[in-house]
Each structure stands twice: as structure tokens, then as C-alpha cells.
Image (cartoon, rainbow, N blue to C red; front, side):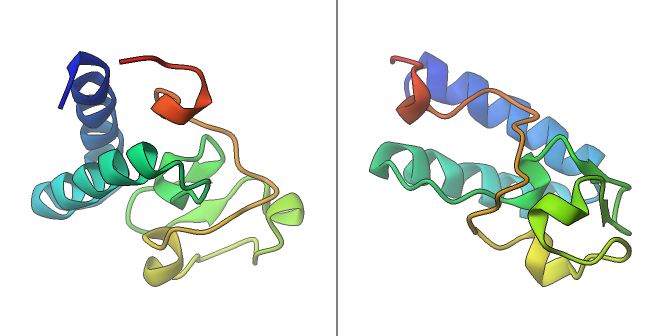
Length: 101
């Protein structure tokens, strides 16, 4: 990983553990997102979104635009790469959106 990828990895790791993921799970997800960024994949995790509220028991603060239920987001949904109309980044933007290595 280059410096920008390491910075994004560390920011994501902190965000994901703050939001209730175990350290091992957060590390696995943050590592997978490095690969996602390199491939130019435009899907996101709910864990990356500024609208995700709670830690472990999650809810979407932008549920109407995201087209999800307001309360109790399923763990599988929060941890799944997806395209979301209500997404707003909470951590460093991926390399494919203007950050250069």
C-alpha cells in the first residue's frame, strides 16, 4: 500500500471499530476497500457513510434517500458493498475520486 492507501485504511479501521465492528472484522473490511478503490468499484459500505447512526445497532439518518428502513439496519446490509443514492462519505475519499497515490 502507498501512503494515501495507508491513510484511508487507518481512517476506515477507526471508523468501523467506532461503529461496532470487531477489530478483525474492521481490518478485513478496510483491506477489502483498498482493493475496491484500486479497481474503481463505485459500491460503498454503510459503515463508510456519514448518515449511519449507532454502533452495532444501526439506523440510517438518510433512510428516505437510501431507500431503506428507518430503524434497525440488518448487519449484512451494513457490511455489504452496494450502491446507495443517500450515501455521503464519512472518511477519506477513495483514490478513484481524486486522491492520487
